[in-house]
Amino acid sequence: MKTRWPLFLFFIIFFSSCAIFPKGAHLTDEEKEFLSAVRYIITGEEKNVFLALPSSERPRFIEEFWKRRDLSPETELNEYKDEYYRRVEAAKHLFTEGGTSGWLQDRGRVYILLGPPEQREQYPRGYTFYGLPMEIWHYGFHQLIFIDSRWNGNFELQPESARMIAEINAAQMQLKPQIRKEKTEEKIPFDFSAEIKRISAREMAVAISVPYKNVWFSSEKETFKTTLEVAVDIFNAGGEKVLSESRSYPLSLTEKKLKDLGGQDFTMEFPFALEPGEYRAVVKLKNLTGGTEIRKELKIAI
Image (tube, rainbow, N blue to C red):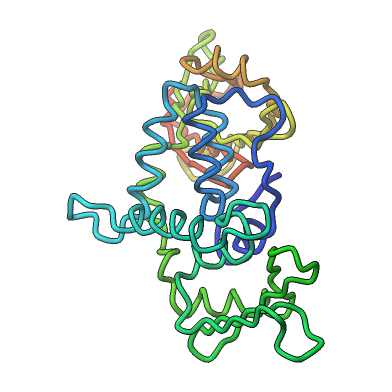
C-alpha cells in the first residue's frame, strides 16, 4: 500500500471505504477520531507515517499536519483547519436522510472537499414524472448530479459527475492547498549517519546507522514494511572508482516492535581493504517507502 500525494489521490480517498484503520492498529480514541475526521485529505504517505509513530509522537504529527495546510501561517488562526471542520459540521446537519451521517455520504464528501455549490437544485420526486429523486449542484460551468436510486434518502454521486470533480478541484483548490513539504521533511526527516571505522592497519569499514523513528514505512495489515537500499562507491585521489557495493535491507516489524525500537538505530557495515592513500567514499541510502534518497561523502586516509 505505497502511495504518493497529488491529484489521483483525490479519487482513492474519495471512494475509499469508511474502515480506514488497519486491523490490529493500536490507537487511542483521540487518534481514531483524528484519522476518521481527516479521511478525505490525509495522504497515504502521511497515514503510514502516523500509524508507524509511537503514541507519544502522534500529537506532534497532528499539530504539524494542520500547520502544513495552513493558508496563512503568519497568523494565529488556521483558516484551513477551521473551514474543514466547519464544513464537516455543516454536512452533518444538511444531509440527514439516508441512515448515514451526512458528512459520510456522497453529498457530504463533495460539500467538504469543494465547499457549498453556487447553486443547488433539488427534485425530491424526480426531474421527470417517472424520474428518481435527484439533486444537481453547480460549480461554475460544471454540474454534479446525485440520484437517490433506492428512494431511501441516500443520494449517490453519478459516475460521470465524479469524473468532473478533479477538474473542479484543480480549478478552485479552495480546500486542498499545496502541502508545504519542507516542513514535513523538517519534522519527520529521513536521514542517516555514516563514518569510517578502522578494523586493522589496512582494513576499514563504512559504518551506517539510521534511526528507526526516521524510517518511513508502509502499513500492510498488522505489520509495517519497507526496504532500505544502500550503495557505497569508493574513489581514489584521481577520481577512479576502486570499489562499488550495494545491498538491500527489507524491514518488516510489528507495531509493538517498532515502538520498542523507536529510540534505536538500524546499523549496516561495509568492510573494505585498500592500498595506502587518500580516498573518497560516496554513500547513498534510499528509503523505498516515499522514495527519499540521501547522499553523503566521506574522506578516507589509509
